[in-house]
Image 1 (cartoon, one colour):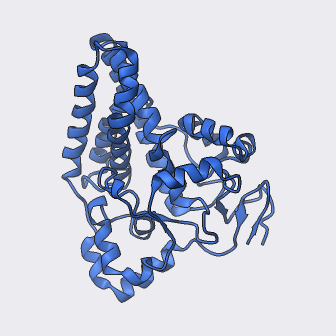
Image 2 (image 1 turned 180 degrees about the vertical axis):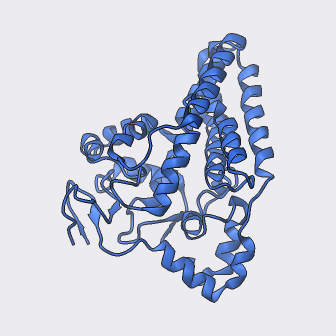
Length: 322
């Protein structure tokens, strides 16, 4: 493995999760009992969407900055939980039928201002199958993106603020993934239609609440560290990291990322049980205790950048370096 100044880290080793999954199942066959869906997640979607609508209604007649404050302290956490629930839908962990999971994901996507659920589903499943493959893993920043952002505080803060924009610019690199389907357009119509409905019925302050909630939930907010926590090389060569902190309560255990990658068919509510069943496989891994500390480290540590990721295949894009 090498870590270049202006490039990713490279490895010819296979991704770690498949081997660990086999080993855990061999030593702890009872883990199979944790595999399954959680239909109660759908009621969580209904609750959080209703909560966001209710808050936007309550602040609709207040100054615009009230939307900013409410979004930072409440809306960001609500929208972040909806992203986790969209993630559950992507893995078909709510309903048995794929179509119902897609529809549930679109419902959870309504408060997010910009449609992403259906596209996330396609790209995220590839991320699990081809972790670290530059041409198939949308979770990796593009080289131009990493070079443009650089190592400075201002560059990384800018990236967090406009994180969804940079993600939206990655698909052209992923040539083997279909950009859109009929469901994509259903998703766009639903979310943009919801945006218009909020503006027409509640007004601009209410809509700004949704905009700020969306922005903070994935970007310039300590919650934005969640994207850094998962695969950024804070302790190389380990390439996947979990977070075991109190925010897992409102983030629906999304911090259990090693556990999720090892068993993506286990729903969010049972991931802590997986860790308890097989502690010898997880207690020896580096993990994060604080998203806030990691957020600050990412912003201020010049050693961490978008290049702080493991790549294991370029498929002709550049020769793989050992």
